[in-house]
Amino acid sequence: MTDNSNVFTLRLVTVAVFVILAIAGVGFSGYLLVIANSPYMYFTAVLFAILAIISGFFNLVASTTYYRSYFYNKHFKELQRSIKPLKSFPKVAIAVPTYNENPKIVEDTIMRLLKLDYPKQKLEMFLLDDSTSADVNEELRAFSSRIGIKYLHREKRSGYKAGALNNMMKHTNAEYVAVFDYDEKLKNRKFLKDLLPYFADKNVSYVQTEKGYGKGNTFSDSVSLFDKFFFKFIQPARAMNNTAIFAGSCGIIRTSILKKLGGFPEYVIEDTFFSFESDMKNYTSLYIPKVYALGKPILTFTELAKQQWRYNYGDTQFIKYFLRYKGRKKNISPFSRIDYITHGFGLNYLSVVLLLFTFVSILIVFSAASFIHITVAQFFKPTFIGLDLEVFGSIAFLMSFLAPIILTKVYFNSVKKGIMVFALNFALVIVRTKAAIAALFGTKPSVSWSRPGTKLSGNFAYSLRNTSIEFSIAMILVALGTFASMHNNVLGGLWLIWYGFLYLLATIFLYKYG
Image (cartoon, rainbow, N blue to C red; front, top):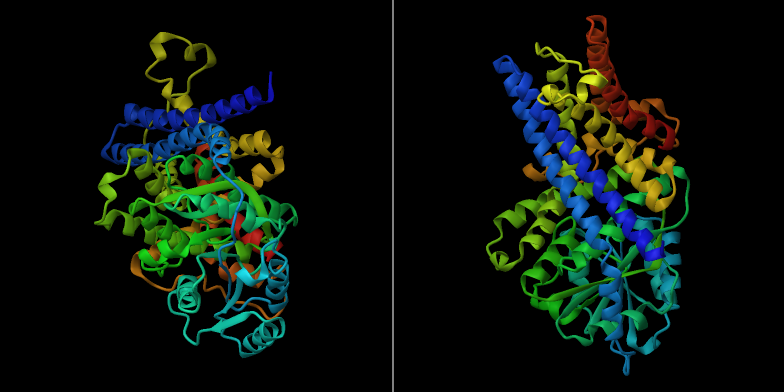
């Protein structure tokens, strides 16, 4: 087998995993309808079927995405062949937004960016400091003055990061703006020389590169897999639909188009909204599968919860925005529509749907339905075909656990990280759900966890106080599972106890990692 055929085979394995998961979930919902014998059971079966169909849709989209991402390399090589080196050097503004972050990390990021391989007279460096701490303001202002870069501070942080970037646009006439997060360390000095040639096509709105993170521990490396799956598979597939997302940093934007679009939309995830507006105005976006800078790894569960809250809050805002959009949405392709819908609903699928599955699981375990247990011999007999659907429940349950493990083993050679990814998705269910609810009602878009005066990790009171909902759900599930087991439903009881353990992971992770 050649390398290419191996890679293609891996894509087919991925497709198979998600297709089996989709069929198994829907199949088990069919089984529940077959054995339903009361209004209660019919209600439970229908609710499970709805969730299974939603889950199946996302699994089938995921399988299609992973399959299509295989063909991006060919697409990208063809694009590269049309690119010619720069003959002249346009003016570029480098923007580093920051908000109450460690000044030393910000300063190190900027010092590395100043080493970009590009004519210095054509560069403008902006430090966009929205920090509310006077000490941080003073240190960053002094640092900016000392090295000769432009420091912009806003007393009121309206519009979040987008507001800071829009404010910067009033202070520059650069043809392009490159955005970097406060903690992204430049690894390739040819960032601008490599990417600016792609703007030879005047319709190109932005160019986004692959984002990466520095090495940390098992926890942080597992967290980085969330982004790796996105940039290795989802972004390439979307790029072929012209729906690649500007990821907020490690990318370049043409300022003339940014101004035509009215600047960055002032939402929590301004990058997604900007990408969508660019596409709706028929501009072109490009994705370059190459890492030019590495961000600081996420080392604590608190940091991860804050990040996921912001993502889910913003995605929920976006799906509302997308569904209400009155512009040229009717002209986009079905694939593009699916890209935007799955992006907006994606984290809600991983949170709200999982939470509802938990509720339905309780209904199933305590239903009056008489489950029919099939022997291996009966499974292969045509007369039992109507009852074979029960097996799908076990397959769906097993595959939902094995899918991330199989994928991380296949693509990143790590079973351990696959287990961690599965565990983290459950540990974040309540945080993500609360973020979605907060976005629907327009309340504060941030995690409001209390902070102890000492270190975060190993602090049981801090962990329990901030994951009280997850802990309570876990204890209820364990109690219900124990009750079911004592009343001769051992498998159902173990099912609920297993779910209880998964919700308890939020408290465990917060205690262990802070």
